[in-house]
Amino acid sequence: MQLVVARIGRAHGIKGEVTVEVRTDEPELRLAPGAVLATEPVSAGPLTIETGRVHSGRLLLRFEGVRDRNGAEALRNTLLIAEVDPEEVPEDPEEFYDHQLIDLDVVTVDGTEVGRISEISHLPYQDLLIVRRPDGGEVMIPFVSAVVPEIDLEAQRAVIDPPPGLLNDAEAEIAGSRGDSSSDEGASS
Image 1 (cartoon, helix red, strand yellow):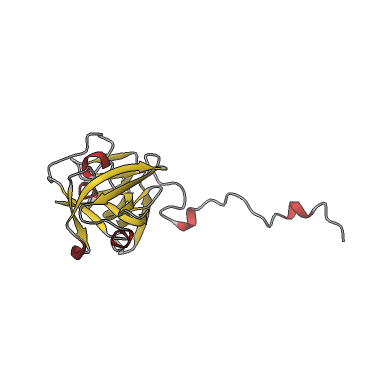
Image 2 (cartoon, rainbow, N blue to C red):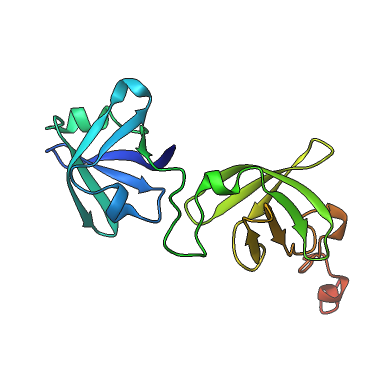
């Protein structure tokens, strides 16, 4: 099975290094020197990692055969894809691979059916579960423990505890209002 483990960012320096947006919880395993990764687009790879280092909080990689800034810049936005055994599971029981989550039924803590996970969207600060509703619509669920307290792979379901307004706009709570008439009390005409 293939998993996207990173996206190549901009070139760093003049010797062929690139920044990468890591999309795996196991970068030391998936993005280690010697790893051979497939790419999307396919024409960019496969790429073999020659070196890796962290600089100012960002992972920098250099690939075999890429020796200058132009070569590195040509790889920008390329997805790096690792081949993973489908039976492999993350070491941490609170972590999941995308393929484990796709097609799970989604229900609220009180048992109300919400839909089925159709996709995982990896954003810089958190992941989103894209859930296809029975009516054909979609809802995006932040994949954080406060909103998704339980993933039960054996039962093939994800239990969510949605805040008001996440599933139904009519339930949204207004935190404050700038148009309060009480703020006009001190004004004179």
